[in-house]
Every structure is written in C-alpha cells, then in structure tokens.
Image (cartoon, helix red, strand yellow):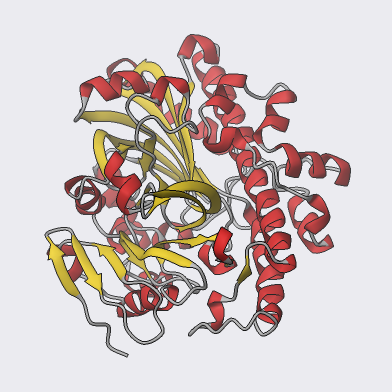
Length: 480
C-alpha cells in the first residue's frame, strides 16, 4: 500500500490519518534524507503503529528511521495507559535497553596522541566482545536476580563504580517494577555469563576527541571542552534481553484475541498495559533494562581499569566521569501534557532516545537548568554528537529524539558490496585505529551502510527537538 505524505515544513512530513488509524503519522526528515529513503516499508510501519490501542498524539518517526520488527527503528509511540492503552514488545525491540553512555576525561588529545593505540589495544584485551561473548564469570541465579532487581546499582555496590555514575544514568540505572519471577529459565541461562560484555553487530566502544563545540555554556555544564578525550560505549541486554522479547511476543500474540485487539501487523502484538499479560511483559522488560544498565556499568569499570593500566593514573585523577547514559530501546511510564492535562503514558522508544527539556524532575540536578544530554553515535568513520533536549521536544515528540545515523544498506548487501581490506585502509587513512573480533562485523558496519549522521542530527537541531552541543571524532574503535 502506498503511503501518502504531506510536507509540513523543511523538517517534517505528515502521514494523514485514514482507515483504522487512530492518529496521524509524523516523520522528521528533510528533503535530502527523504530522497535517499530506501525503505518505504518503514513509512508503512509508521502507519501500522498508528493503529495501536490507546495511541495518542502521533505515530512518530525520527530521521534515522528504517525498517524494523513491527515498529520502525527510529519509531516512537505513546499510549494512554489510564484509558486502556497497550504495551507492545515490538515497540521496544529485541535488544531491550540497548543504549549509549558517554564518559568524559580531563585528558587532551595533543598530550595523549602517541598513546591512543596502546589504550585501544588494552581495551580490546580487557572487554569481551563478539558474537556470544562471555565475561568469564558465571553469575548464580541468586546473583542474577539481584542484577535484575537492582540494575547498575548492584554493580556499583560490588565496588565497580560510584554513586555519581548512578546519578548520571537515565532512571538512575534501575526500573523498580522489575520482577525476576517473570523471567524464563532460558533467559536466565543466557544472562548468566554475559554481564560486562560488548556483543557484536552495531555495538561498539570508541575513544574520541571533541573537535567542535556548538553551545559553550551547555558544554561546560556537561563537562565537555575542545580537544578533550571522551569514551563512548554502545551495548544493551545481550542474549538475555533478546530472550525476554522472544518469550513475550508469543504471550502477546496469544492475548490479542482475548482483548479484541486488531492490528495490521502481527509483529505489533500487544495487550492493555494494565492487563495480566501487559504487566507480565512490563515487569520482565524492566528486568532486561536493569540487566543492560548493569552491563554498561560493568564495562565502564573495565574501561577505567584499562586506562589506568596504560597511563598509570587513577580514574579519579583522569576525571573519567559519566556525562550520561541513555536508553534507546525501551518503554517508559512518563507524565506528559496531553490536551492541557497531564496523563500517564507508556512511551515506546524503539531506536529513539529520550530527550527531556529543562526542569524535568527525572534529570540530575546539575542538568535541570539546560535539559537532558542526548548522545547520538554516528558510524566508525565519521562523527558522533552530544545534544540537549528541549521544551519543544516535550510538546512534539514526548521528549524523544533520534538514536543514531540509521542504516541504508542491509548487512547482507554490505557483505556483497564492501571489501574488507579497502575498508580497513579507508579507516586507517583517516587515522582511526580499529580492532574487531571478525571481518564480517566490520564490513557489516562500514560507514557507507549508514546515513550521514551530520544530516540526521541537523534535522533534529533544525526542528528544535534537540540542539547540538558538541561533536566528537573517532580515534579508535572496538567492534565485536
């Protein structure tokens, strides 16, 4: 079915409501990105999402939108749980709480330049990465249950981090509705040995340098300066989260008939949030989200140790502090203004980042005056960005932004079209050090398989949803 669109302005297109759509679709995309659009199925998925029970506002697409399971990746939908609104595993994704955290340092590139390769090599040695990678430590079921309940806090309480890490993590690194009794034996088995591992695919660890500042006052509040060494980490809940999603897609498919739910795609299987099935998935999803925050916290500890081993300086002396940790595959219960009244909504962000504006109580006190840091990785050959959420985002997108560059080529196509040695030379010529556990992953994640993150970020900035604060250039990359 062809999707009819209407351009509203330079940065937005509307998909008018028709048929059984409950709301309009709204996609943030300029003409250049729209003309390069290779997956019309993703726009159809925006239409499909607009059929969800209880959806309010718009079915939203971000400029990094591309085809995904049920929801497009780069999709946002909010449902009114007080009016029977639903929750859908397809609106979260299989890698529950896949997310990004940004660490700053007081190191300057000019001083550290000659030691970058040693640092990357040490990180590659110390942090398990790759398909099925394991940490070398098997958690007991009792330990894993504590991780699922306590999230990043459990890791910090083992001595692997600080209370400040938790303060600068979305939700302080824990969702309190987590219920380990909702987790299947298979998920427990998959989660026992993967805490503190990077994984594969688009997950990465990157050492960067800040090469441009757009908003000096905000950058200063975030602790960011020109020429600074930063570290960006992108990973999620690994096999544990994938199993949770797989388990509950089946539950939702079985439940839809019971609640008279009719959606145009079975991958949008859902149930009312406050139903038995909806609550079971929510409590299991919270477990997986907590696992992901614990995973990133564990790797943060390993990153600090690696720098310390190479530089013989403590993390405190390095100023290696967390700027922020953001999720981009998650559902959250949030209070938002809807028709001039505040309502409790279930906001699904699938390949989309929370981008709260100033004064929200969920933000660390140091950031309340300016808004939430929004971390947008690009690809390993170009740039990544630090942005800040706005009041306009609160009004238009339920406080949401894009999450990355967005794929334009499938992994299978990349393997056919991109030569490994040419890619490696291309990155080396840019001065980017690359360590990868396999040639395949590197080729699948080549810069040309992604949109240019500069263009994607410019749409969000131009639309006033998130504003550019700083840009980081990659110096060294670790891929699974």
